Length: 290
Image (cartoon, rainbow, N blue to C red; front, side, top):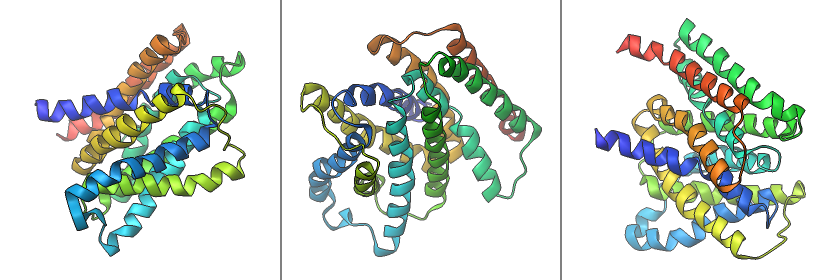
């Protein structure tokens, strides 16, 4: 039981710190250049260890490079690039609440690939969860706490995240997950770098302790530890792994309250409850089949 619970719980705790870490980092640098530094830094800092440990196995087989590149663009450039871009416009709690609906998108994409129709429970669950997002987000948009462009970035974030998760679960990959992760993060960062300049999000304002602590946390805890746990979970079962994302808004609001002094109001609580209820309703289908 512990073997099943511990990786998922650790993933949820680690992944939910992403918004807080990014918000500290963007005090010193623009969002996209910060993301690029994180991803490229992950490859540069961690690759010597894996070169030493794996020797020639550090290079994926020729036929698997396409998986590395595609997943890197989907999961790192698009998913995490959009997430970083959103942090300027939304609260950390709302960021984590959006990722909580990724399980529904992953289920939807898995169903399409498996030619399985969505059940009535899944449809109802999606509608309830979407209502929760509206309840949580709209008041903060109206009072100026978050901006609509931030919601757009978060939608790109969760859609890309769902697509990348289903893609990886279906891909035939023989290289070690840790090695695959290093390469996909590094390549995703390289692709994101010119985009940050094109979108005028490449300025580093301060080179200080806040910047280095933020980058260090994101490289070790998020890019390496959390991503490795996620690859482990989705390779076993993409839909079951996605269930751990249910916990991210709970931890996300907690970290935002503790470290960023963000408020937790009635709309946030009501929206979070509706999202979780929607996810539970959608999971009724899985219980009925077991």
